[in-house]
Image 1 (cartoon, rainbow, N blue to C red):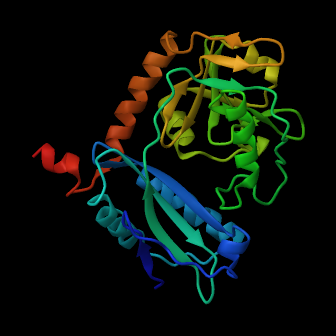
Image 2 (cartoon, rainbow, N blue to C red):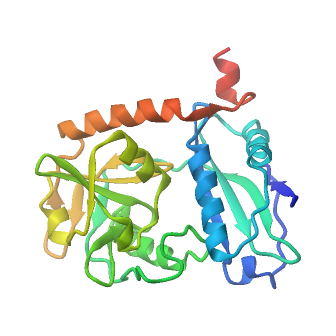
Length: 278
């Protein structure tokens, strides 16, 4: 059984610069939300990592219980609200599984989504649908979005269909129904996206930018943001203002998601929240 490395706050990880994990971003990662001292959607995150490792040929002979115990040990050194990350790196002589954390980023008061992203997503890429450390494309997309004052940008695939953002999945509400791009569009099967598909009746399909621009409400999702309403779409001419925050569909979806996450979260004894609520 390969070892599991925990990087506690204030410590550092050493990597061989010649290893594929360092030199080429050959690795997979997961980002998990610690909310109120409880770990959300653990089994879905772990299963996605295992599935991607099998497809991309990275050995992942770790016991899920042992990895969860490492997460629990790290959580004891973190605040009750935090982000925990797993990285499976291709190194020699065997892969390394690293458990570490990063601070929870503040959510913007107003959320914009850039429509005119210059970087097309290749739905036929062998990396499509996998959360890899080869993340430069995503960062370039994110750089474009932030330069325009937006949280994220909408990526289209080679067929001109809506796919995803750099750090989020897309949802929109139109004609009394929820919609999201289908996995065949090349997007990452987000864990929070999957949780929302369980909570809501969502139509998955192939959509164009016009479908998004004509929506009553637009949302982005990921494991740290949850489901976030988009206030405006940043287009070439002028912003398209939305009432996503006040739309009735958002309040209902937020409550259903909160109930589902609560039912699927794991208490990590020893975190600040766990001690405070005893």
